[in-house]
Image (cartoon, rainbow, N blue to C red):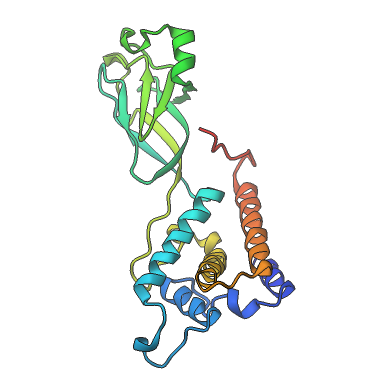
Length: 244
């Protein structure tokens, strides 16, 4: 992957501006690379045009933009259902919910996928009083902001510890310390720290009225390659579901 990214950089003649000088992709290393790229280097920090805090903010901003475009981070969380309770708050690091499964039997520990529904589809399929259905085994789920609703709400016979399993695309945590690494530290994605560096470089130059079509095209090309790499790494090679 790294050879491919280097090739992309050499193609437009900006290899030195888009790759970290160190082997480890850290916040501090990315910030240094950005300074080299925008010619903001000095023996003393007082002479920097951009403060470390400003660049850190930009780095985290671009990381968020990349994650929202590519959805490389995937996780799941277990929630314990409560008898008669329909709505449950999902994990705070949830970017998009992929699917929800439910443990139907304590003896098998077998999670069964629930059917994704919208409020409108539930109105048609279950009637407009679907929120008042008798508690039973949940069959559908609906998403509302940072919560999921189980339809029908679970009855006591179907409430097991960790009985709700939510698979989701994960947000990236902000990097705070210079030793922090991007994309939640996931090793296969560290080479794409160069994409963050390039994205911040483009933003900083644009603030000064400098727009490089080559750099913008390279950014889009690397973003597309990142998305393909993530797609290929999924176990079933399935299409990433980000439409909900």
